[in-house]
Length: 264
Length: 279
Image (cartoon, rainbow over all chains, first blue to last red; front, side, top):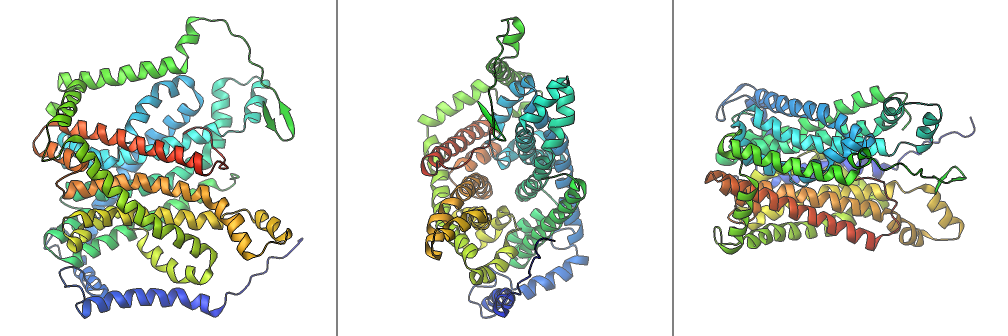
């Protein structure tokens, strides 16, 4: 070994500060509510949120479902839309990157749809699909497809031209170059899209549920507001954040597993 | 001319015979075909009522938009609504970027500030900005403040993350050069950190602008009396599809124009950014 990596131990202050900062944050939050700096109709303390969490594990009232069911509905919607957007978006982006005809025909469609935030589709989808699962899946699909297409397109476009020229020299057909050179070299970018698309899907899921839903984590937040129960709102927000982060970690693991052996 | 690993190559273009196939494979011809097909499909679906009566035909949308320019809708003309949304975005965006960008830079440059801010930031980061709408309505009511708050929350995260990562991912060789030439810490920061992280910061601003559009729409869909989100939700409540689609078209155009503006600004402010071909 040419040189050894030396691990420098962080100074004590640097190791303690993050903990102190978190404790300070949660403490201030708790105290703000305890001493009624903000009225209790505006903010719930961490302790109240934990209590409500325990209650909501088994109690369906007052919003009609237990926490696990809300979470399950949201995950179901998000995943259906997410998978559909991967299935459509990645091949579309790959084809657009390599075949002129595919790009010429698909790009104007895509560029016209792209600047519209997925949230703006909500009123139309309510007309088209009602407030059931299909409408939300459609919105999530639109949200997820954009990063999939862009990343796979750019991935193919960034293929090293030397490799393509070499394949040409050896007499490869267009299709062979596409499947054996362009797609493998685009893979890291495509996998990058998995995370981005997931984040988009999750954000827009909450948006879709705020407007039209009868279960789901976004619905929990809305009900909390309607009932003026800030503890329910905060619980909903934290569940959304935690579930999103958790799914993100899983996707990251999958990505690492699949990408093992591919040079970035 | 293209340089690959110290060799300079020259790509020679063969003159191809001009046939029907050349026209058919021409990019601009295909774009035109695709656009025509898009509008034809839209018109066809609208005319045959394949999706019920809920999709307005293109010319109905145009008539609706022209009508909104002259006849105010809910007290504001079309431009009034556009300005209402843009104003909210601008206020929130400016506040968030003025706070978040310097904070991100400080976090990357000073480990102590990082140790204090990062845990709290990491705690709040995974919550989508739209999830904050309810709490912001509880806090600020349904006025302007709650919408601006949502936009601040939404734009804060990418601004901070990008300026933070922009500094942290600077190639260490650049620092080595400055140090070798006898630069001190201040010169390192001013001459290396800032210019090198600028493209990343700008990318963050661009991302946050598009997130700001999502946020302002979501906030306006939930509660508002002006703005483009209000226009489309009004269209839904009055069952007037032309209004919904018209609102979406305007949103697309305005969002697209903002992106163009930022890209142009970026070229002006930091021309040293390396471009990736494509989108």
